[in-house]
Image: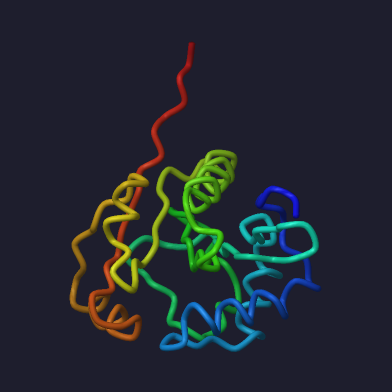
Length: 171
């Protein structure tokens, strides 16, 4: 087996992505068609964790608007023209492969954001992962009533988090 590494997701990876999503997020199900739309709308933000011929995880991200969480299992239809964040819809890694790989995906997503002149990455922490995201530089953000209502569909303890992308060293 080769060392796990992130690569761009391909249409043929959807079956594996959907299977991992169902295993990792049984209480937050999403249809394969919804996941496929994210891959079609913003392929650069969609990666799989490849281990030889197997897929052990995935990450899905796309440009979005801060404080506006996309509803789970819903189509985006299109991406906003004036996006002000890169939204990490999901990072899911099978248990036997965890340990630092989310950090590598976030680093790749940060590069995408920089290239698009986006200065913030956003996500919703679920399943008590808030401390892990904080170690990766994300901070809980204040949520208004509308955002709190949307977060409720993500389960108890869901937290909206932001990570500012530091300016590049200009030396």
